[in-house]
Amino acid sequence: MKAFEFHRARSIDDALGCAAQPGAQYLAGGTNLVDLMKCDVERPSAVVDINRLDLSDIEATPTGGVMIGALATNTAVANHPLIRRKYPVLAQAILSGATTQIRNRATAAGNLMQRTRCRYFMDPALGACNKRHPGSGCAALAEHHREHAVFGASRSCVAVHPSDMAVALTSLDATIHLRGLGGVRTVRIGEFFRLPAERPDIDNTVRPGELITGIELPASGTSHASWYLKLRDRHSYAFALVSVAVGLDIRDGVIADATIVLGAVAAAPWRVPAAEDLLHGNPPGRSVFEAAASAALTGAQPLPHNGFKVDLGMHAVVRALTLAAEGP
Image 1 (cartoon, one colour):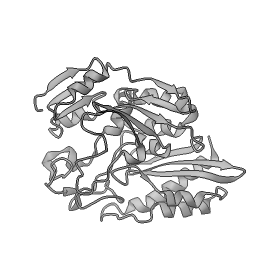
Image 2 (cartoon, rainbow, N blue to C red):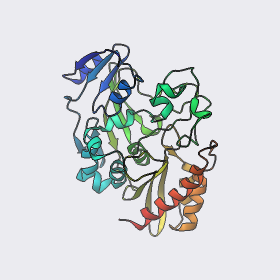
Image 3 (tube, rainbow, N blue to C red):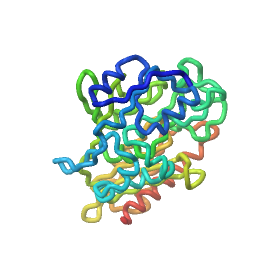
């Protein structure tokens, strides 16, 4: 591990000032950053501990939504009465990830900022990785890529984003609140993550030194009839092969609105508006769910080892929509 400066921030302004130096990174739960530092993948010049900042509240908003503080732990979010009652798909997604011990440490903002678990990124000894070392190549293309992307990839990178929570947040149209030395801004979650293109080393649209301060969930008609389905090699402590978050707004027996977001198939949660549109105006049922599932996976470009994700994804969409329509 490379030597680094350590700062314990006393306020948001203090944190922003400490993080202004090149190569500085924020430390919250540390469940991803510390591992990457140990593996010599991340080499920050300075680590800014933000755990003492007042950013852990989870509160109702005046518009009927919920604001989740950036430092709220995954456990606190999943178990909060507002989340369980108004946004059960988010609670399901969080509780399907990692272990209880990790969820007790990991934070909401850290979950969004976590990096891929591609083995070539995580272990420098295994081969080239453009995300870890730009311009070095992508070993996954010629080697093992069973867990990798079928959408939005490039010749530079085929890694996927590992978050369960981000998939649910995308289905809920969350807004990310950020603060930097230049002021505050918001980013819709659909614009938060970046696909690799020619710069796979840049995961998201957070600017250098910016700090996520909160995640806002709007009032949603699709949040109650919803479901998060995660398919993986083993039930506990495994990243998804394919996941899907869906939501349905059913009125007078027909679907008035719908969301379908796939996880573990791209470098960002993969939302498919064309598949959602097929559900509008139809009564819920297997035939319309199968049509939407087929549309959701249209355009997939699997690699030799991960073609199974296309069929698995279609079955996952049908199953999740069925469970959402049946209700709790």
